[in-house]
Structure formats: structure tokens, C-alpha cells
Length: 88
Image (cartoon, rainbow, N blue to C red; front, side, top):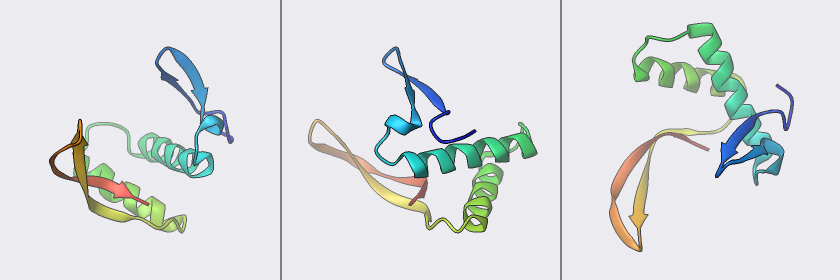
């Protein structure tokens, strides 16, 4: 997929990644995911996809952290902390 071809439905509207703030990075991540899924297929544990995704991001020279802690807030109240699968 080329830049801006990835589509997502948000609130009933079709939006291309070109409309997003970090469209280049978003396109790379989505295309990497689809490439990974097309190669591995379905049926593996989440940890397998996570490790393969990390490997593919490293191969592309993209900087990221695995299992990055992120605080979750709701209505101004901290709900806790969770580990994101990957963060750039």
C-alpha cells in the first residue's frame, strides 16, 4: 500500500492515513503489520506476533521500546498503568 491508501473508518467517515498527524510513521506501522500477518498467518499467540513485529521494526531501522509503561487516565483520574506492545 502506498502512502494515504490505508483506510480506516472513524465515526462513520473513511479517513486515509494521509489525514493523520504522523501519516508516514502510521503507514509504515500498518504496512509492517500487514506484511507480518500475511507471512505468519493466524493462530499464533500474541507474544509471537509481538516478537516478529519488533524484529521487523528493527530491520526497518525504526526506533521503539517494547512493553513501554503508559499511564491511563479517564476523566482526569489515573486508572493505572499498562504496558504498550510497542511505542516509538
